[in-house]
Image 1: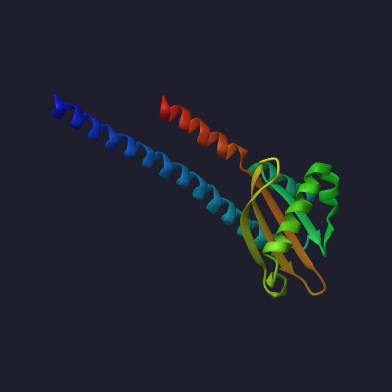
Image 2: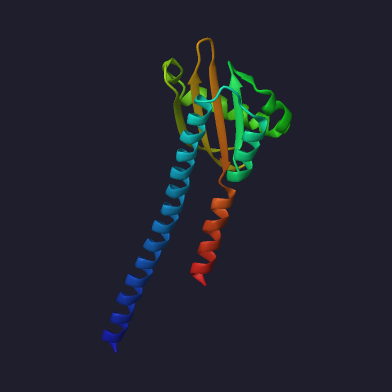
Amino acid sequence: LRLTYLFTCITSIILITMSLLYVLLYIRDIKESNYHTFQSNMINVLSNLENTDIISYDWILKLESAESYSFFLYDNDTAFRFVTDSKSEEEILLAEEILSYYNTNFASGLESYSAPTHIEFNYSTQDKKHFLVGIGIIPGTNSNLVLMILYPLAKQNQNIILFLIVFSS
């Protein structure tokens, strides 16, 4: 009887450990996949912007709706009309907050490059909203074009919670 309890306990510990490891690896893979997809999309959009002379309002709106992104474009720290016309005051304040965070933590030296450069990072607001942020800089002769893309992680987090609920049942 003691041997049966011992076997049951050891088997249970192994199964629980393997299950937790599976859950942790799955969650990590979801986050990494979303990050790499976002990074790839950031590179593609930056490349398209670099190779075009005209930035179309419709083109930006299509990109935003296709990927659930929010685009913010600045020329010499001045927002494009697209930003001021299509974004709420809350979104503009969030973008300014993120740009301030970027300038404090990442900007040193990036503006001095003669080729386009970009950086992607995670950002959390004080009210616990989480975003993937991509900031790209396309240097020009007299000014820099700055592109910021925000991707809210609420859907990713909902998918993780749904997976945890399904897995635990």
